[in-house]
Image (cartoon, rainbow, N blue to C red; front, top):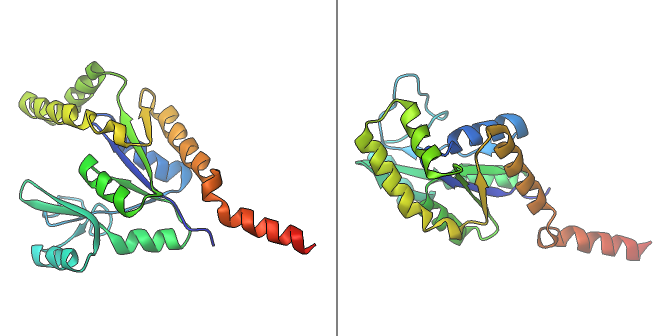
Length: 204
């Protein structure tokens, strides 16, 4: 069985990467890695669906046993990508998407050099700002912080393999799927197949 691919998707806050990832899972059947967190579940959230909810002791134990591909602390809570789920899915031939921040993405790149890294952006800063405002869930001060963070993340865009502009959601989703399919066809990702077919032809 061919091993699945690991796809890392990052992007500016407001670029629509969450919606893009959701549609990739729905339309093309990708497997989505569920993060672990020490924050309390919000109303309607289920353990194992939105997050794996852990105590700090449980989370620390997983850190100690190298149970996370990457982890970070945000506003007094910990978030991490469980290694076991990702590697099991890939071993069973499924392609796994990680929707993570830039810092985590760089850690993944070091551990999985064959992973595909895609950065999703809005077409311009005005679009990014208006999308954040249209959410209606954050104050202008929080939006300003998110845009400042986006300015820092822009420096790291060069570390990604692909930059995809989310101008139209369906087009963006199809483009990302095309990138992943194209990567599967790369010569270096088909060395085993090439060798097998060569040997089979010689045996005729």
